[in-house]
Amino acid sequence: MTQPYVNITTDNGVGTIEFFHPAHNSLPGDILAKLAQTITEAGKDEAIKVIVLKSGGNRTFCAGASFKELININDAETGKVFFSGFANVINAMRKCPKFIIGRVQGKTVGGGVGLASATDYCMATKFAAIKLSELNIGIGPFVVGPAVERKLGLSAMSQIAIDANSFYEAEWARDKGLFTKVFEDTETLDQEVKAFAEHLATYNPDAMTEMKNAFWAGTEDWDTLLAERAVISGRLVLGEFTKETLKRFK
Image: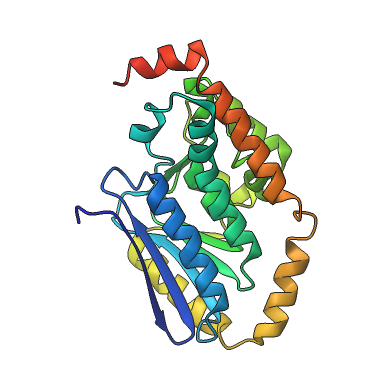
């Protein structure tokens, strides 16, 4: 696999959305926009009862936003648009009337932790360590922060946001509530995700929609909140500290 993509397949009432990018599944703006659109459309598809969100490849679930695009930001508006990419996907997941099951096969960083946090039920392998690395380059996990905090709690989210150099093991993420189950390998993960999703698809769709609405109560302001957070990140990325830090990666 060399070309980035977002695909969806439907089988037995389960819509499986898969994204991929050859750079460790880091996601540029166009792929994020397509992912948000695909999630929204799947939410309207009557043939789909439950959604599975996964990434291609074996090693990394999602390395966050595209670093290539990040280092080329030179004005506040471009910065806002860039950081709105993950905000739009998280809001699409939040508003989707169907349960979204996360399938996390490997490490996930930054915005990828936000995606995992925005799923309604998430399973992983033991290789699925997580890291919020944004502070390392002079910004912070402002856009994904609300989703991560909602799932992990403020204390755990603060811990990984401040300790921006460290990966936290999948078992830690399970204990804090991000992952529901952690498996030894990807094959077992896929078997369990498939069985769980297909069983869930036999439930009353209206009941599941009402449950999802109840679970996400209190997040109705996230369209505005995450947009405001994107502005903060867009401003910080233009600062001298971040610009000097990014030069080392060019």
